Every structure is written in C-alpha cells, then in structure tokens.
Amino acid sequence: MNKIGVLTSGGDAPGMNAAVMAVARSAAMYGMPLVGIKRGYNGLLRKSTSVYDDLEEMRLDTVLDIADRPGTYLRTARCMEFMDPAWREVAANTLRAMDIDGLVVIGGDGSFHGAEYLCKLGIPCIGIPGTIDNDLPYTEMTLGYDTAVNVCVNAVRAIRATSRSHDRPHVVEVMGRHCGDIALTTAVSTGSEIVLLPEVEWSVEDVAARLNRQIAKGNTRATIVVAEGCWESMEPFDMYTFLNSHGKKCYEGEPISAERFASIMKRMCGMVEVRHTVVGYTQRGEIPTAKDSAFAFEAGHLAVRLLHDGISNQVIGIKNGKVFYTSIDTALQAKREFRRDLYDLVNNM
Ligand code: ADP
Image (tube, rainbow, N blue to C red):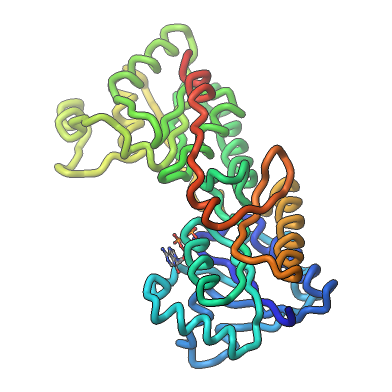
C-alpha cells in the first residue's frame, strides 16, 4: 500500500481530529503519504470547482497542531449522493485516479455502510466509530461519547447547585435521538432523580407523581434528565388542553419540548417554577477528554496498521476495555444491550 486517505463523516464528534492526527503519525511511520478528504464522502465526488476544496495532502506538522482541537479540521457533511451506486462508483474512481490505495472512515453507522460499499468496489476501508451518541453496539464506547457525557455532567452539576439554592426542579435535555446512553450516564453520574429515554415508554402523569413524591420528601430541586429522543417514547398526552386550562397558552398541534414539559411539571406539582435547560451543541464542540483522545490515538494507529498489512472491511472498537477490530458487517449487525438495571436504579426513588 502506497498512499492512503482519511475522511470524517456524519455528525462531528470530539476526538475526530485526534484520530486524524494518529492516522497521520502512523502513515508517516510507514512512509505512506496521506490525503485528507473534505466534508465526508462529498470530497470524492468531484463536484467542487477546485480540487483544493475537496482534497488536501496532510502534512504531519499541520495535523499535530489540530490533535486536541474540537470539531473536525477536515469538515464533515452528510452526502446523500452516496446512497446511489453510480455516485459511489465516481468516488471509487476518484480514489483510484489519485492512487489512494486505502481509506480510513471516521463516522457512525451510516458512514460505515458507505465504507462497506467502497470495499465492495475494491477500495480497502477501515472505520473508526466517531459519534457522540454511543449508538454502535459492537463497541463499548464510540469516539466523542465520553466528552459529550462530561459536558452534560458538568452542566447538570451546575444546574443542581442553582436548583438547590432556589428550590426549583429542573428538566435538562441532552442529545440522543435513538440511544439514551448520554442521558443515562449523565443521570447516574450526577445522582439525578429521574431519567427519560427513547428506549423506555413513560407517561407525563407518572413522572409528575414521582416528582411530587420527591417534593413531599423535601427534595425541591430534583433533576429530570431527558434524552432528546424521549419525546417519541412518551405515552399520548393532551398538552394543548392541559396547558390552556392551566393558564398557559399553547397552540394546537404544538410538539412537546423540554420547555413545555417543565411547564407541565410546574403545574402538575404546584411548584412556583420548574426550569429547563437544553445542553445542545456544546456536547459536540468540546475539547476531547483524555479517554476519547487516547481511544482516538490507538484507533488511528490500528486503522493504518491494518491497511498497511492488507486487512480491510473492518471497524475499530473497544471490548473489555481494549481496542480491537471486527468486520464492518459484524459490527453493523451487533444488537444493543440496554442497561435497564441502571435505568431502574436512577428511577427507583
Ligand atoms: P453517521 O455516519 O453518523 O451515522 P449518517 O447516517 O448521516 O451519519 O451517514 C453519514 C453519511 O454516510 C451519509 O451522508 C452518506 O454519505 C453515508 N451513508 C449513510 N448511510 C448509507 C448507506 N446506507 N449507503 C451508503 N452510504 C451511506
């Protein structure tokens, strides 16, 4: 193998730059030139007016400087064309024309599907799981997850301090559309009283009853940590009728949100205030923790070693605390084990 490429794809995740740095270090060690591909698979489609918008020869000194920066230096984007076999052929031809013999893809399960297709077109690929959601069951941890959780834990700790001062319960929404791991680990790590996840059905009335029990016991500053996807697992509730009949204007068909949910809790529990905070994009743009950076370092090196040794169609992960690799296919078929025990521990107050 002579020259290799690297790209970041899907949602950005802290640690993507650290992984690119490790790939660059390892490529330099093997004497293999490295090309950075911009904006995920888009950089391979030759749609830009200048090649410099799509591809960049990665110099080691540049890459060493970006290692601890959040975001992704190579940029990232979704690339809908990649669903189309004709466009994937264009991408494979671009790689061949550039004499790029192998590709490291840093992204989530969607990006891994794309990599699997490229492998079938004869381009050796290795995937590194870069996504804050921790929604890839074949690995104990995805790159960026630990950083995202730490952002949320810091936010909830700060919120619990002010909640205590003002006797105000608080609803805190964190990321996680289909996978509630960020919310669950945040709740566990902060001693929060209630957690709501996309994985478990819940009802507004039940949460209000539990919050009321906390208040009756003198805990007037309980924290309800919610994953952004938890609204999908909520049992039907007529928010429009409830809020309008309790002195709060609400429009018909309005979707529920952390703000609306806090409003409902305030009225159902007779509190002066129940506040809400959406932690939002700070979870994605933080400097990677040591744990994420260390994983990125090992994963980047392993990815290049595999390509160098002629091994392809694999993704890297963590099993029993150790970095390992498995086939893309096996990884994408892995079933998730939801930590119901932890969920029950948080919610049993
Ligand atoms: P993630 O990689 O974080 O799961 P997406 O699901 O948005 O993020 O996927 C990122 C990109 O991977 C998509 O924009 C597309 O270019 C490519 N991709 C996703 N799913 C597929 C698929 N089934 N086949 C081919 N390419 C895909």
